[in-house]
Length: 493
Image (cartoon, rainbow, N blue to C red; front, side):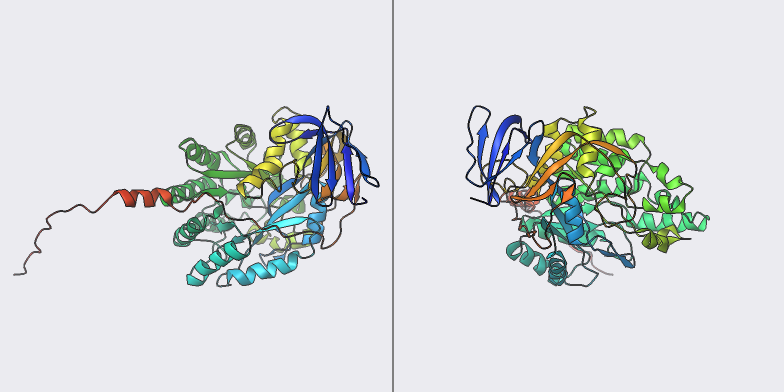
């Protein structure tokens, strides 16, 4: 049995527990698990991996990436092969990328375009689909995408006026349709009208460099949009997922809603937990521009709140918003910060950064780390327990994690297709020793072993629980028009 792998001597860590166990992988799935007092015989010809002193965990799931994205007059430098390969080097075995149609572009046409680009992926992937405009064809395409193509989440940008921004009318139409389908609405929460106005004001005040970027997108801009979209979802009775929650203002809106029982999910980016807005004041223009992304990095006191949100469960997932633009692309905004392509790297570093700054500092337990980097995303996007678990029958997407392995992050040594790193020079203790994607070793002791096109598109069915605007419909079912005598219309003259 030459396609079998036995992982011996490791401590299996899931979102629920830690235990000593050996694993047998046959083909693409976990075939058997032997607990500490049990014996797992290795089949003839099986490869045996010694995981002594290491943790065996579900491979990471990054629910927010942008590979080869056309954006702001250029195209992201990371493609689906290089991006998913870099992910594997960091212990991430699945990414959920975003299909972003141009205004008036059919959703189905954009989806098939992205599927074509993604055929080169080295590890498994899924696709969210953005709603950037509205008419009956969008309504119909959303149904086709959920029923025939395994899409269960739709993205909405409240920012980027004049390009892909949704107004409230589009939000309402799309949210209602997603509710009917049992799909999840994800949202980039920034008030696009306010951002546009602030960008003009900051630029006209003579602030043209990267330091103008955070001035034009203060925390209040995100907080207002987060609160507004949560309230819209509340009225319509649909769940909502906020991407890249970066500040106290948005976290407070999420916390209030969740404490009131509303079904609100929120993610935080690893970089927002450890990098602050001082990067925009670097005298080196390139270094400052490298950090231009939206929402921007925040003053340092927001980091403590975001960590607390992750610890308390108010923030459920961690992501990267991995969207790479190299230095020459960033220089498109020389003299005008509004033209700097928004995006940073991170898919290779997310798990190590969270382990080093989270688990090693005591902010997170190992099980909470697994939940935040893998299992919660699998559950929210309805691919659990196929992904995000260590159990018999699950995909053998695994990372063997060496908690003592040191690495200094640098663009000189990383596998991401970008000429800088926002984590340049950061030492992280705790890194992958092995990464397995559906039973294939794709990373081993510093060496990538990915294969172009080996990744599989993972369909994500809509949730079995019927989410479709039940609150409003239940109210309408209980309430009938009141019978009353209407006043006579006034007579003219």
